[in-house]
Image (cartoon, rainbow, N blue to C red; front, top):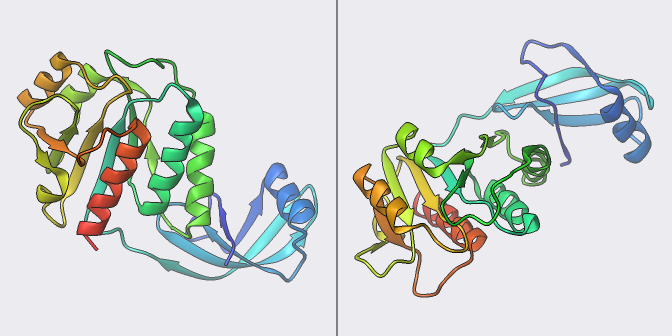
Length: 234
């Protein structure tokens, strides 16, 4: 099944008109014709089966045939991950985390972050593409980049973890997860969190965790954390 995405489709719509860019993609690139069936999600849990009633480069219109709603999972995953020096590594993380199942992502700017300016428009497109490829009905929320100190003060969850590399007492993440909870996991930059940041997280009741015996890149650590939560809730 090929899945299309448009956030503007509502469950009450009988017909829907795609904009010019989407219409060109559907009619010219994918060569979809009148009578063809499209499966569309709005990224908010709804899946629509629709039939093309008009298909050309400027305007594509579909008639809704059926719709179904998928309830959210019994748990949620919020990954707060420092941007990587190379954008393509962060983009890889976004793609794979979406495929595994992440609900919210926040880029956090840390003391030792090498990249402090983030352009999120391309990131959003990667999330949309990964959602469609993995046939999911919920689009992960991508928050605006925020400084670590501000994030810590304004975010909380049922279970909160910080994965860091300092040689202090930590527990393996897999041994901390309680099923069916809302999780918030902090993953630092290539240079790790600063001692000050770690102390601040601990003061806000984050649990210090390890993800294994090897030193991981930022994006690898984030993927492993996401997969660990998903696996233990499966």
